[in-house]
Amino acid sequence: MIDFDHPSIQALATELQADQSSITAIAQACFEWVRDQIRHSSDSQLNPVTCRASEVLEY
Image 1 (tube, one colour):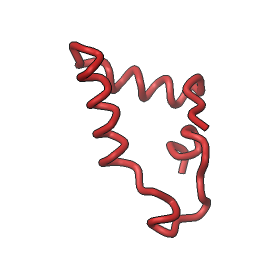
Image 2 (cartoon, rainbow, N blue to C red):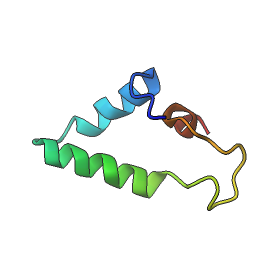
Image 3 (cartoon, rainbow, N blue to C red):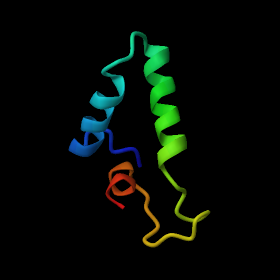
Image 4 (tube, one colour):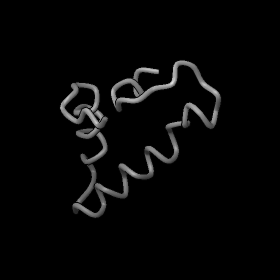
């Protein structure tokens, strides 16, 4: 359910890759952003439980 073409996902991807100099650095920046910024809905007992990447960013 990675709706990579959603405008909010595209905007975040553009932001995350802006200062990176390699594909590896971009992948690391994306991984670290998700690791540090996204709480897993079921682990954190959040509502609503999200599925698509754009929903995760919205909630």
